[in-house]
Image (cartoon, rainbow, N blue to C red; front, side):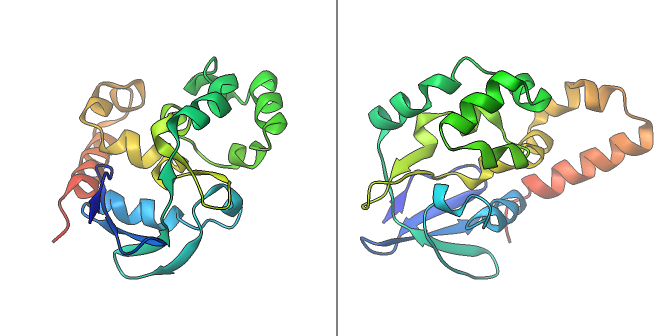
Length: 174
């Protein structure tokens, strides 16, 4: 049974206990690499196995109301706060036992979106979208990136590389 997935991956329920996330774009491969990361493994669905273009993880139901309440203290912070590692944000994350996420290049708005979190059968709140752990994949695949300061103030050779990288990450999986 197909479930809601992101831009880079398709998600299918294998059974009541497991889902398979299959890369449908190159960026989906990067997202799959982040599943089961040992640094934040307690905050991700339990990892079972991986293949060339897929991962099998614990089947976790969304719990928007509960995750909205859990994430509420983080809603006042922005991507800039995260990038600047502000003391207030670090304190909030540590208080929520999420301090290890400071080690990642988070896509902040995806990280704090209740739709990207769920609750396991044993009661753990977990981040369902490991793609939120790497802003680079998200920003470099977004067509609007070509209007960002990082792009606009790059040299011609770097702009060409960025466009090629974007095209590769957005390419449908063959």
